[in-house]
Amino acid sequence: MELNNGENSLISLTFVGDGGEEKAIKVPVGMSMLEAAHENDIELEGAFEESLACSTYHVIVMQYDFMHKLEDLNDEKNDMLYLTFGLTETSRLGCQVIASPKFDELRLALSAATHIFSIDGYIPKPH
Image 1 (spheres, rainbow, N blue to C red):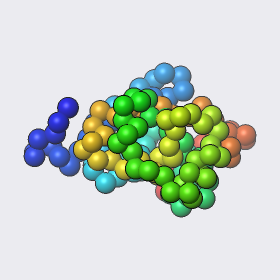
Image 2 (cartoon, helix red, strand yellow):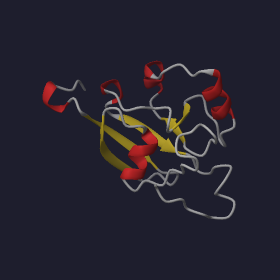
Image 3 (spheres, rainbow, N blue to C red):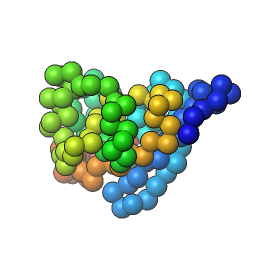
Image 4 (tube, rainbow, N blue to C red):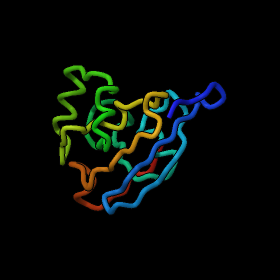
């Protein structure tokens, strides 16, 4: 779906929870998927506020054909992603995917668990 000039500041995304529940949202271009999740009450951990100090904001790109549209990862981002629980070939950290018109209609699955807060059941709140 190509966006016209009147709609180029928002894209459509769908987050899919580990139970299969879906939440479709509109996101402004330039916003990270972590920010988008937090602003839309989607439970995606963000323990260190996009500082690449942890791997808690794991998302999985559900459409393989979107992978070529993602930015190549530098060594630091790749190393942090490698620490992610449940890593898949299409995994990224929510802070690494920034809303862009090329990601309109993107579907992201949320990881079922993380390395930090899933142990004690703590559910973080957006800052």
